[in-house]
Amino acid sequence: MSIPKILEKMIAFSEGNIHDIDHLLRVWAYAKTIGEQEALDAETLFILETAAITHDIACPLCREKYGNTNGKHQEEEGAPMVRAFLHDTGMTEAQIDRVAFLVGHHHTLTDVEGADWQILLEADYVVNASENGYSKENIRHFMERNARTESGKRLIKTVFCL
Image (cartoon, rainbow, N blue to C red; front, top):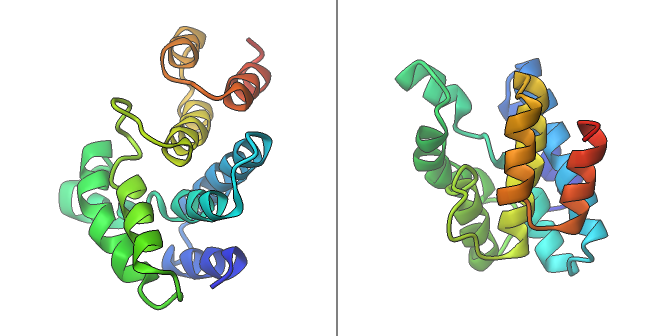
């Protein structure tokens, strides 16, 4: 299944929740931009884009089950949900495994392995920071301590006028 089809499927899954749809579109756009600027190979870029599109798949469930969208709950609930969501897309088990891993770790900033994971963290952070009004100090701290890609750092500086 192509990225546009996965995107369309995830928008339908969002059942008209404009905030969730807007969020996933913005994370996807930033992730794709950083991934292309970092010259990811086609396979890694496909995995990254799929993970960016589906990274918050558990948010509706978390709102209902826990009353919030705490990142750790998203990670715990999201990994199995994304496996079920992607089962009929024609993706290989290895591809689905990696997307599920990324969805299950998209709020985990330690022991990051792989450009796809790093870029997903950076893209999601940029969107969360803009949506939630993070302070310049918080944003600088993330950029200095957690951002690893040159493209992500440039993007953060540009978006937040640092």
